[in-house]
Image (cartoon, rainbow, N blue to C red):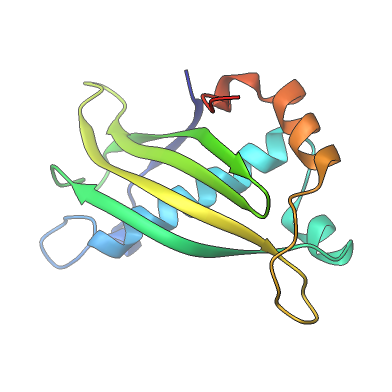
Length: 142
């Protein structure tokens, strides 16, 4: 299972030929991770104000098929691993109608202190709330 976030491709997402520019798959994945947090009751602004900042440490994406103008997509997000300051997300951008996987990736997100930018543990409260309120996102091995 995974947290699912629907979206539609707009002209601003595409190149001259009506295909989604490759980097926008990363933007779609970023938005889905943010919406997953929001589904657990957390906003990015709230987390930043409480002294938490998240940065991407590593991305590995495979593109399989193009997304096109006006296409309805679903970004699926699951959490594969929690390790101290790092969370590893598995994500895919899929066609909503056919379930064809257009791209897939692994994204490592690191929690850092906003003052010194040094890694710090993901707060237990945040992890526990995400597990309770968005259980479909958890595929991580305990």
